[in-house]
Length: 245
Image (cartoon, rainbow, N blue to C red; front, side, top):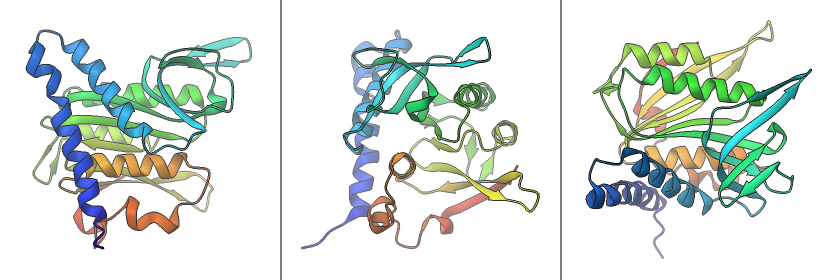
């Protein structure tokens, strides 16, 4: 029996590509907000397929009390959380919780241009700072604007990543561009590292999801890396740039 995990991953990308245009085909460009919410719901639905039963996914806010101050995040498009802990409030997919059970957060954009990338990465960075601990923090973009052109990276993207300093750690820009932060410990025990930018045609969406599954799992998943990351020669062959922070 032939098993082809590469084609399985490509099918995820194709599914997201096809689904994203369905609402626009019916309502046109007159209701961008509704189209954006639909795409968030589509992505939540697909991610949910790969999560274990103790992990749920929704949208909402995260609150944290520090000293006598209560901090609140911006509204977060996707929150991945451990459902064995109680939340403060939940209604359908909407929730309000504290950082204790948050395993990952994602900002979702239909399209992202170079002029917008600083604001989006900054928002995701600030949301994670409310949580305070290292988690999966992603930006998922259905369609790349002019941020990556061939092998050239926009100055705004490079500046945004350097300012985030690894707080935002996973980004997909359309179906082909995947960005991952690799932390490195230095002798002074300070955390630094690099963002690696990969052009993995037809795999960006699925690799984003695979990294999310791996990072939010309580179990080691090495025995299934052949499935999670199926590019035969590995994605390093497709790296177009490192950005050190």
